[in-house]
Image (cartoon, rainbow, N blue to C red):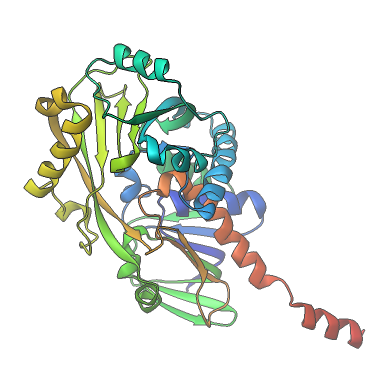
Length: 371
C-alpha cells in the first residue's frame, strides 16, 4: 500500500532538512516524510564552507540572510549540540567600491576602518598583502559550523519527533500530481503519496522533476572549488573576505588549516560530486587570486574540495509554486549559499504552501453569501 503523508520534502540538504524541522514545529500533528537520494546532508551541504556572512548583494538575499540568522539561533537552542560558533570577519575592497559593499551588509556594526586600523591589520598578519587603494571593512561578526554536519543534525533531530519519517538512498523518479495529492514513484519501486510537496534537491534540480521550468528560468549548475591551506590558524584568526575577487580565506581551527574559496567559472557541470575534480584550470585561477593577497601561502596548498550548485541568472534563490500544480513548491538555486540562506528559504517555501491552502477572497465572499 502507498504511504500517505501531509507533507513530503524531496532533498535532505540544508533547505530540505530545515523545511522538515520548521514544518514539524509549526504542524505537530502532520505526518511528514523527508526523502534523499543518498544520505541526509551528504550532498552539496557536506562540502560547503558552512560560513554565515551577514551580507547580501540583493534585497532578497539580505532579507533571507537576516531571517536565517534568527532561525539559526532557534535551531541552536532546540538542538543543543549544533556545532555553530561566532567568527570575526574582515573585508577588503577597492576604495571606490567600499561604500557599495558596506551597504550590502546587514550587520549594522560593520564600518569602513580608519587608515591606522588598516596598518594595524597589516602588522598583525604580516603575510597578508593588502593591494593599494584598498579599504578595510571591520567590526563584522558572522558564524560558521565547526563541522559540516548541520544539515545532518537537523535531519536527525527531525526524525526524533513523532510522525516524522526519513527515507535515505531513495530517489524520486517520477511525480504524478492531482489537485489534492502528489504520488511520488521512487527508485525503491514504492509510491509515496502526499497532500503537499516541497522539492529542494540542490544542483540535481536541473535533471529532476519539473526540469522544464528550471530551463525556462535559466537555472544552471556551476562548479564550486575551495583549496585547503596547510597553515595552523591561531584561536583569534578571522575570515578575510576579498570582495574585488569574490574570494575568502577562512580558518578551520578544528582541522588545523585554512580554506581558500574563490570564484570558479565552469558552468553546466554534471551534478555528481564524485565525478568532479580540481583541475589545472582551477589551480591556476586559485593561485592567481591567492598570490594577490597571501603569496607566501602558495606553497601551502594541500588539496581541497570540489562540488557544485544551481544558480539563477540573478543570483537569487528560486522559491516558487509549480505552475498548474497546487501545494507543490520548488526551493533551491541557492548559488553556493545554501547553508547561509537555507533556513529562511525553507521557511518561505512552507509559507507558499500555506498561501495555496488559504481560501481566496472571492471564495470567502461566496461562502458568506451562501451562509
